[in-house]
Length: 124
Image (cartoon, rainbow, N blue to C red; front, side, top):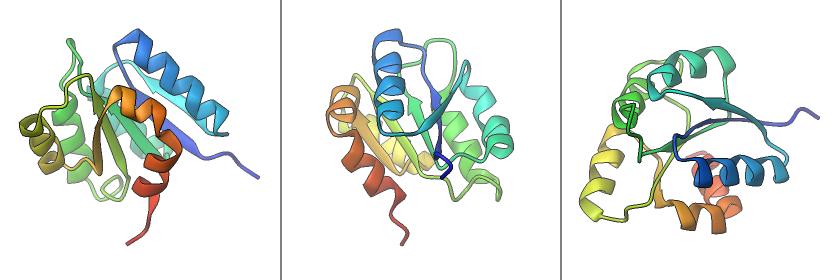
């Protein structure tokens, strides 16, 4: 059986590498992306099952990348889990409006990854 692919963008080393390791423990293949701007093209090419995006990027604009993923027919269907060290409701609203399926704090993501993946992957 083929392992599902998770596409992951992160700049912060600690939560990013922990997330990659947890996904691999859950039998996901993981492809990391160095810039948020590369997400739309890479997602079209790689056809992942889920996209995970670190919102605390200093060198990229992850919210714009999420909007681009949602603007293209080839990637609009992808569930997007966005995570941040911040839990401000106003930030979460902006990211949800951009098209993220789930917005969470990075520690909650690491603690509850199986449940959040299941929730994001539910077909409505």
